[in-house]
Structures are given as C-alpha cells and as structure tokens.
Amino acid sequence: MKLKNILIVAEDLERSKRFYRELFGLSVILDSDSKVILMEGLVLQKRTGWEEEVGRPVLWGHHGGELYFEEKEIEAFVKKLERYEPPVKYLTRLDEGDPARKMVRFYDPDQTVIEVGVPMQR
View 1 (cartoon, rainbow, N blue to C red):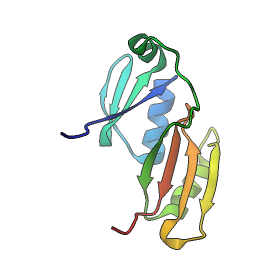
View 2: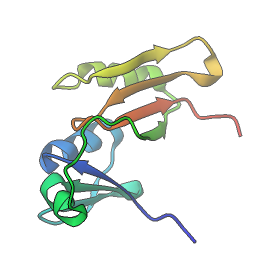
View 3: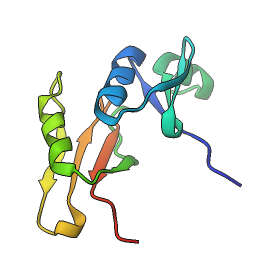
View 4: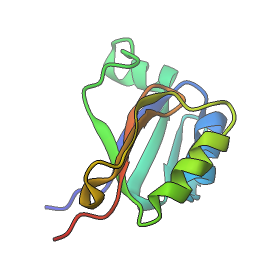
C-alpha cells in the first residue's frame, strides 16, 4: 500500500494556492472548481464540497494534526514567513535551543497547523 495524498480543507482555494506556492514552492498539478492537487501530494478541497461529501461542518483550528516540512535554511524560511502578507499566525516562533531540532509552527490561512524543521538526522 502507498499513501498518495493528504487532503486539507480550504475556505478560499485561491488564497490557499498562493500561500502554498509562495511559501513552499508547491505548484498546481490539477485544478477543478472544488479541489486542487498540488505537488508533493497535498490536496486542497473547498469547504462547501467537503461538507457535502462528509455531511458535517468543518471544525476550523481543531489542532488534530499538522503538515510537516523540512528546510535546511530554516532562518531564511522564517524571514520569508515574517514578510508574508497577510501576516502568519504562529503557534511557536523559531526554537533554536537544540541546533539539531530547530523548528517553527504556524497556521495556514484556514488554521491547519504547519511545522517546519531542519532535516532530521536519519
């Protein structure tokens, strides 16, 4: 078995596409009225379509999971985050206590938790 995609719900697909393109370099592979597939297997589903599919309202900001990215140049990435408009809301600012585990946590435009850390030693 192979995991193919991760789907997250978005209120405004254009806003979310811009966010993931400008901050993470994820370009669009497929774009429909209610769903967008980005590189790396991230799928954005419009809130109204998702609510129809599951028959329940979206619970924004539920903190039930996160998207995790790794970035070697984390300080440069944090500077890009700080310049982003509209401003990004942080859960934790850059934690530099352990150089092997530098990380930052913040929300995407629809309150999905994102963590960006330096690559872990494997």
